[in-house]
Image (tube, rainbow, N blue to C red; front, top):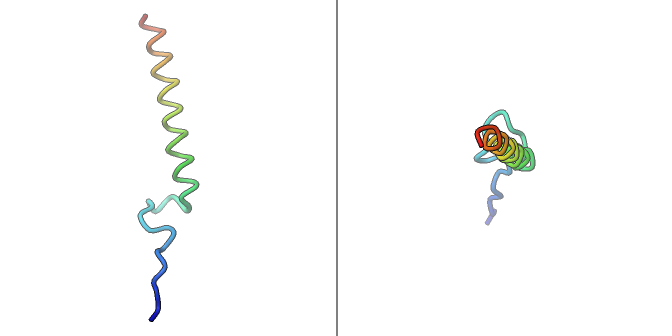
Length: 45
C-alpha cells in the first residue's frame, strides 16, 4: 500500500512558491502595519 505525501505547496496562493516565503510575507506585513499604526498614533496624539 502506498502512502500519499501531502503536496508541500498545497494551499499556497499561486504567486508564492514556499511556505517560508508565505510566513515571511505575513510577518513583514504585520511589522509594516504595526509601524504604520504607531506613526499614525503619534501623529494624531
